[in-house]
Structures are given as structure tokens and as C-alpha cells.
Image (cartoon, rainbow, N blue to C red):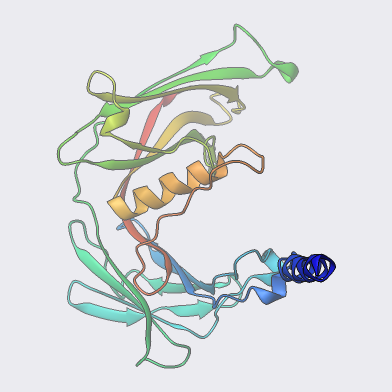
Length: 294
């Protein structure tokens, strides 16, 4: 009798262990439905508005430029200031374009973006709304000077740059700031941005202020023409006052890019304000400020 009980116990144990055996699930088995991804930023200084439209990649699936799930025949509609028009897809640039004269972008005005199913203007896939910040001078101060005390190879010099502008805590204001060098000749001009690479410090709020000012300083290599008879070089700052949607998206993007490598890092989710989909529809006002000749 004891042998029969022992045998039965072994049989049940074997069945239980086999039923708990690990099962590996491959990537093709995880097939979450993709969602529409929209990207569009508007600004009164833009002569052409652009928008991107694609499908999200399923979870755990790697993507690259060749596998980009771009939607080429969607319908993207922009509405505001009593006007409405539709973006047109550009196959060369692989995004949608709309002349700013079709729906003028005005300070302190609200706009609605709607995305419809391919070749159908009745099934809404995603929508979002944003408001362009009012036009107001940010009162940016630039201090830029050449520093030849520590020459680099090839006898290049450094530029010491300090940028500051007053902050305002209430209501909260949001900024994106780029800086670089502007070079001019008798027939041409060009701008070389220094901090435009993804992940570099670009976005600020009043919480980043000290003694009432937001400050940014840098020291970088100067590669101007070096002769007043050939051309002139100035430091240039592009300051965009953004709405909260553009700020939260850009801030999350920087945080995601700056995550240190490793399997145990906490992920950073990108901000999205697209109802029914993913992505960002944001607005800004742009100001350019130049220094004296370097």
C-alpha cells in the first residue's frame, strides 16, 4: 500500500513539474496593434509647416530607417484663425508640407490638428490642440569674446559665451535655446549651431533660474574667417518660447537620450498629446539675437 501511495505521489509530482515548464515566447508571438504617430510643430516664423505621420512599432520589435512605417496617403488637417487646409505629402522629404499662408500661424492663437484614416476623411485616427505663445521680447543678453590664451591645434581660438534672460515663474514659461556662430561674407552667410545635437541642454523653465535669470555658458572652438576684409563672425542665439506640449516632449526626449547604458536603467516615456494616437503637436515663438563681431 505504501508503494502504491509513493508511486502515485511521484506521478503527480512529475505532472506538476512538467506543467510548470518554462515556455519561451518569440517576438512574432507579441503582436500589439500599431498606433498612429504624429509629429508637428508650428511657429509664426516658419514659411512652410511640416508634419510626420507613421505607425508605431510593435513592442520588442526593433526598427530602423529601412523599416520606417511611414504613412504616405494619410489626411492631416490643420484648423485655426477661421481657416482650414490639408497637408500634402512630399515623397522626396518623406513628410507632409503646408504653406504657412494656407493657415497663418499667429501669436496667442489656438490651432487644431486632425489625422484621418488613409484616403478617408470620416474616420478620425488622432487629434490635438495647441496655442502659440504671445509675442513678447525675452530680453536676451549675450556676452561673447574670443579667447586665444589656450590655442587649439591649427592655431584656432576659443569663444567664451554667456547667455542669460529673465525668468518668470507665474505663469510658467517654457524655452528652447540654441546657440552657435554666424559667418558672413560679401556674398553668403551660414550658421553653425553648437548645441543642436539631440540630448544636449536645450530646454528651460523658470525653475532653472538663479537670481531671477536663466543662464547658459559654454566655451567652444572658434573657426571664423579671422579677417574683417574677408568676412565677419558673430555669436548667435535662437531662443524659442514654446508651449507646454513642445517643452514636455523635448524635455522627455533629452532625458531619454541621456539615459546611461545598461539593462537596469529606468525607461523614460516620451510625452504625447495626440488623442487616439501618439506624438506631439506643439507651438513656439522664435527670436534671434546676435552679439557684436568677434
